[in-house]
Image (cartoon, rainbow, N blue to C red; front, side, top):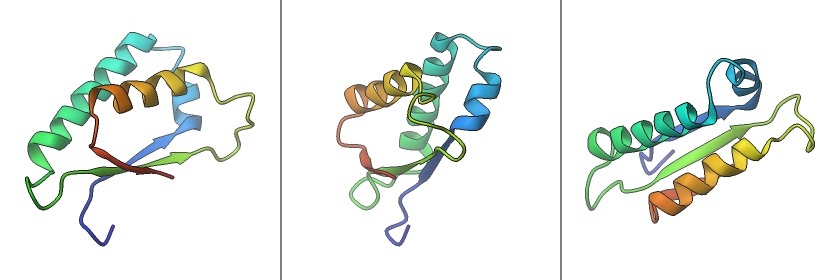
Length: 88
């Protein structure tokens, strides 16, 4: 964005395709790794300290938005407080 915040894009179609190949714990470990990587390598202390998340829900109904997605967002909100700027 205009403030140089990193953008994380979560595509629900791709998650649904790969969700049967990996367990939820594997996804959560990957999210923690990604967030730590962003903090260490993409954020600048005092200048850029937050990120944005885009949820691509194209082709998904409210029923298909799984509880896994809620767990992932909750993980990021609880463990990386103050780092999330917005979820679109």
